[in-house]
Image (tube, rainbow, N blue to C red; front, side, top):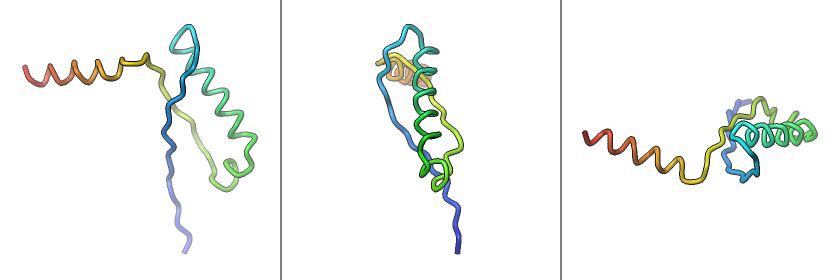
Length: 73
């Protein structure tokens, strides 16, 4: 039998940039170029999308703390 498998790769990269948008763009362009030039990713694993969001270190933890405090109220 032939099964279809939906796969996701999760990772974190450190990108030097002036803005969040610039960091996202730099990584997006680098990953797109890599995938386009990889016969295996394009044809065997059939990569369809790349998605990500930039944040400052520690920002994610602060958001979790803020949400935790709101739940206590």
